[in-house]
Image 1 (tube, rainbow over the protein chains, first blue to last red):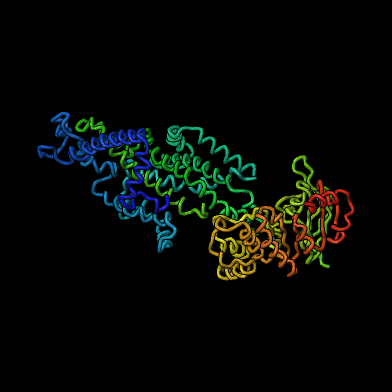
Image 2 (image 1 turned 120 degrees about the vertical axis):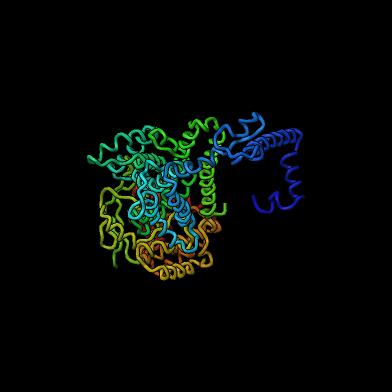
Length: 370
Length: 245
């Protein structure tokens, strides 16, 4: 929509716009009214439940909520909304899992710096981008040291990690590691070298043909077999390997779709100018192919971010796992809606963010007038 | 005269289809050769073999004394010295006009960016669109795009230019601006191999005309001979078809 047709310019335009689009015929008018009533009902119901009639820390009598029996809705049934106290009381677990409370500042620091590590990669027009990119490359080491510990910091084994920490760790690291791998797989699949090509095809098709749960189990059981005796990789690392391989296969297919869309003439033009295979790939093919593949790539990233919940089955507690653990606590049980709405909201924020970023990127990379 | 391209008994097959049959051709320095013929006659394939966009299977192609084989080093070296302009322009849509032109000088010749940009601007002026330097190919007309493509090739400072139907994808009113650039290039002494059906251009520029049909060179002659006194019936038929309408 061009700016001067925007309905938000003046009240007059808004009126015209709604006349044209919402009330053009009486069928349209009825549909509009029904839709508005529906939205109003659902909206007010939800807002009342989630905010206006909800408990946060205290119930309607002003008592601090320390277990489910203090929730207003359990005292006066049918009169009150959500009981968010479960989230507040268990907030530490939702964010950090079983990470020691006194060490939580380390995780906070990593959370705080994560945006700075991403920003240089995500926005190419950023001032001082180079500096941010240096930080991006240093960040995994800093984050590992901060989260796991080492000289000067007490070690927090990964079995103590949980909640959003595990979700973000698997999501962000999985995507970051899978991306370069997937590019190589996609290129390999289109390679002229039969051995490289068949390795890539077999790998991609095998991973795509198997559910992530199976891969997680396999990584959990089989990875130790490939490692020397005595080396016992921890569960989180195994999950990360499985998630990365899974993601790389799917992303490779998304990228391959982009590669196939590049006209042969592009490669011929690059070759005729004397560019070699890697120059052609890096300067001509990948920039165009990745641009075409942005929507499916982001799709797989969003999918992966949500699929990290499956690590529950190998004994890791991601955000959803922590939520389920909270629900199984006898003092808080049955507050399903609160827990699932909260967990959904956090997942939604990240996934919606990825989706918006992909739209921004598509717009930015557009170079023609169409 | 110095021979820059030699084709000797070149044969090529696409699977079972025999597209080039015993092609013999010698191009000397500064020569302008126009290749014409019906579609499917192998004329594009022939010039695409010269910079190895297609590989021939039998015979010998020698460019600047280097034989084209599977040796990637030789291929890269030849491609650096042989420019090519395509029917579909094949500009890189994700790069601005100037970046399209500087790409190869920077990455292949390892020139500093500044120097490459100066060269690019020189050639953009030569093709008369320096003001479009910062635009993207998608924002230009077909004729402008093809001129950028010519500038992009020239920026590598090639001594041979191959043109593969450079005006076939253009609207009629844009053909002239591209042909003018090519005529200017010819006047400057560039060695040119041009596949085209622009017979006016051929008469102006060509030293030699080549007519191909069914994978063979049917006739090779000076333009004068070729247009006024063609030898083979096939050439006569072809000429009557493209000249009489």
